[in-house]
Length: 393
Image 1 (cartoon, rainbow, N blue to C red):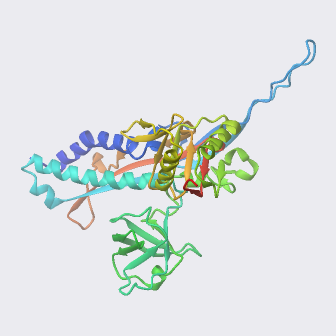
Image 2 (image 1 turned 60 degrees about the vertical axis):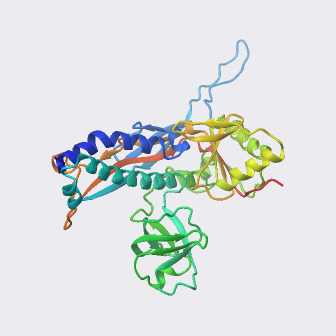
Image 3 (image 1 turned 180 degrees about the horizontal axis):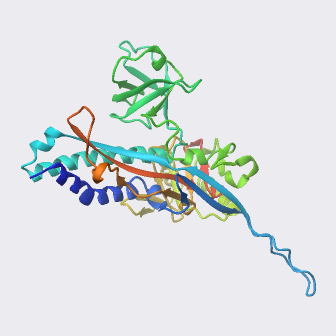
């Protein structure tokens, strides 16, 4: 007979390992290459000491002259707070009781819930990898046809999906103007969302921005935070530490092998960094394939861990990702990135180790996956970003 206890046992013993592997290896090829580690985690923070530059105690001299003055490495301390990452499933008491005499029906119920959790988690964690930690999904735009006031027009739907629950903030003062809006429809051609409820003018006006529910300023420190030339990152000022500034090329123009190779050579020359993955937007991948066709070059393909496929550029896998902004390419050395975590994915446990807990005032049970982690790059100077890429001339 299926009971709450047997449901908890299945979630702990059968599903946790599978879900953890899926979330660690199948979000995208870049995330699969990043090492997950518990090192440098101190309490609620990540504190990592890294060396920058070279040891200064090297020199040449005469046969009887003085030896080089010993000058040790230069160190910097990088610091981040662990982010709290959650994924929740919900099962009704009625559904459990309806399947209590059928193990097959109960397995189907759990499978459906876990597949939904995996789909949502892969989408959002994949999105966070390219964000800056602030959680901004899109910016609102004026929509004159919003007669029933349940629609929001945005500048981009790249980070949005039906079913997401979003908050809306005022751009000028970052105040919350609406929360808990569920997206029920997305017109990807017109970039118009339909959400639950009737919205006030302050929500649908131009210039507001959307975030995932309760997630503003709480997401992973992704590539969007790393690929900036000024400001503070990991508690260190880029202005006084230029090794924290990556290679940035804007308004790049027509795609070519020379453009890509220049970036690869630059990070090698500046930081001794060996690129091992290239990630582009979908349009840039199309531009590159067209360029290879125009130049009558062979197209080589590679199989990557996690079941991913990639185009080969001089032996470096090139993949496209939906969360990369149009006209953009990242050239990265994944060895310089670490996902520092307090632990791998775990079920949130209540009293007596229970993971299925009744929702207050509701005949439903919830279970929550949790991970405390953040992403850190200890050599930003060894990474490259090219933007403003257009089709081959």
